Length: 130
Image (cartoon, rainbow, N blue to C red; front, top):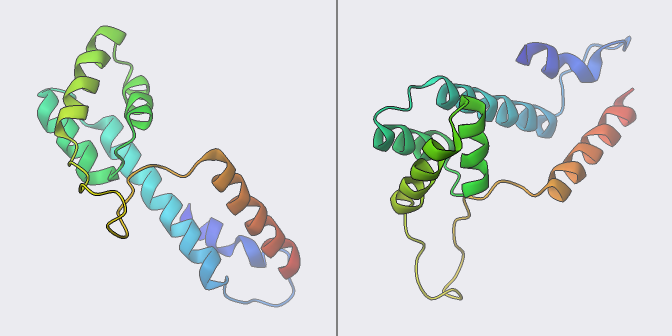
């Protein structure tokens, strides 16, 4: 599947050229994230500590809403989800104190606005190449 996505910019073109590096980077990053999500969803949720640690390690996403979506995909009941969410919040690495101290790592997923902006840029790039 990733090969098809990587070849997408040159489909229908008379000239066979390699996809731009920025496009390739976005496709690889997106497919890697999708694979990690599938690994987490398919993993057993017992014991909960192992499941939560595995999620944090594979996805590096400290957003409780994203974790909630993963639990929904697993088909867990709300009662099971609430205890897992509490455990998730406890297991998150604590952010460094002193907010203005310098650059910090953010584990949150891109906002829908950022994601749609990326998609628009990608669409423009594809149209330019065709």
